[in-house]
Image (tube, rainbow over all chains, first blue to last red; front, top):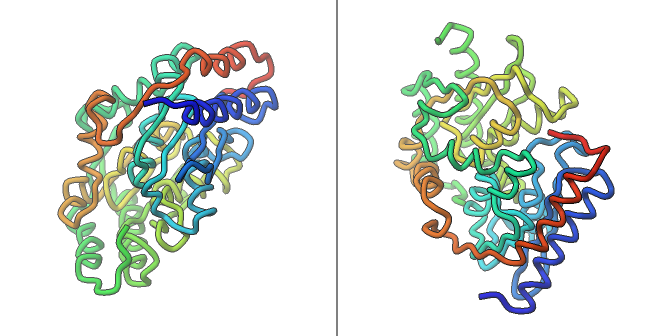
Length: 159
Length: 159
């Protein structure tokens, strides 16, 4: 449930998003990662400013939190994002073990300003053969060798 | 359709994946980005080695290709990945305008060695209220202000 503190973190994410547009450094998206009531990472969309198409606000905030905390495991952290995460950012949140997501705008709202977030959710609900990027399987048996090497490895670091 | 050249690129992705396990630098995943028959970016999973939970092989390869080509737009590029992209990496491929994806292992194969890729596709096919990460909406009307600023911006760089 929303508390005043929740709203403070969301307002910070929204302020980051709006400032990012004003300073012309990227899309209208901001995000903060919170742990135990403190901000441990922030991010804005820097796709165009840094020539990194993966540099969405949430990905940048997650990367910042990983750097700041010195870990790839953000268990116990919450994500506040000015817009519902796109599937890239939702999956990144899952891999990071984010506990709770708070969003401002919905993916459907982003669609109104011509962003594909909502379209992407529709795409990922389809079987791979029906998605918009053609996808082909190649050398599946040879590829298993990498997985077998992982299964056999005795000193691997799981994540 | 697969040609010998396609197979060469896939074998490179698989070799990267297997070497990554052998050198204990991350998970059993490798990827290459190809443009006009040349490799323009490569990546392996470096989640644990770099404390970056977003550092999947495909994301790293896409970031490398963006850096090498000096652009956030990988139109005309193909992705060869030793395993079907997880939804994070599939969506990253979409945002990058990747033309075609070739995968070795399937997400279902990754599940056999305890990776969540297939589970993530199942999650993203559900409505947000039914996904495993609790998600709450907060200050949606205030958040629209960032989008309105974007809509009103006359010098924005679209992507």
